[in-house]
Image (cartoon, rainbow, N blue to C red; front, side, top):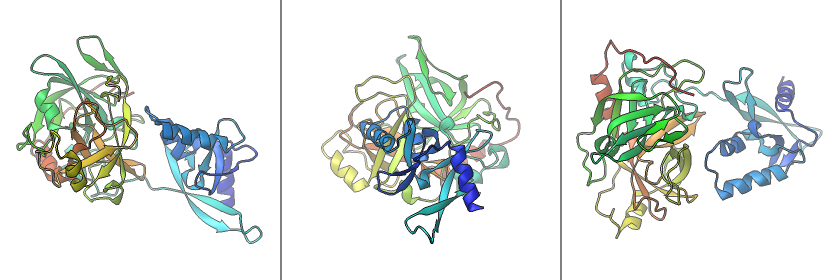
Length: 387
């Protein structure tokens, strides 16, 4: 059964002769199309690819003799399901051959992509405020937030859908921007000189909920909820699902590990982006963060467990316009948010850390605000909210 399963996997990936290869880490791999390897597909799907990542893709391609194939580690192989609506990442079980000690056969085992009940803060909301326990496997939960300042200038921020009715963002976005218009699962933006528009139908805000202790001059409490005037419909194949706010602290999100974010902010040249840009950053300790910020304009605010500090590792950081964007990681194919982009030194400065709000410190605040407003009578919004 294991051998037949492997043969089926090879067939589904259309493997050519010479499919064995040596990966960059000097382990056995298979030459597969780009869509068949989770590691290379994830890089290829990004809107921003660093020079280092480009070189990795080139090296993986050169390791294969077949055009369009890349050398993929066996643990990164993907198998596409027949309906093409989702992919199952494969783990590997090694069966050593008695006739060829150096050869290894691998049997695919599907990874469980579900999130156990109770792992996310949202699991503890009333039934009418939940969404069946499913969480985002893609970035459709991302929200482009457009608004105007009190002086009439246009502003942009980022939010994350955490329930069908609520978007999580930074308090300074909700405080400083008026006439908010949200675009759930937007990718491209347009600008007619008067206002920003996303490539999806707009959503409108019924209520803005800003943390009571938020002030513009201090760190912490930079968190807000935007209650929509209707629930985002869920259940269709391409509909957005909320991002999970994890209860437990995960090692993969701790100091020294990388986190992802996205937004429509400025690039390193100071130019605003009209497409969703992905950023990879590294989390650093609060002590290291304080030491680096000493002598800057951000030396005053106290940084504690309510804050997360990150530094750029690609040169493209979460610059101006990324405010409210999620700091997140992926586990079992599901996205988890641990931070909200808050403030940094300058608009495009990648020499200093960026400070984000530690979302997990405000889980009970989020639950209390949604619970107090939960009840019958909420109407699902009509029309297509996603693309």
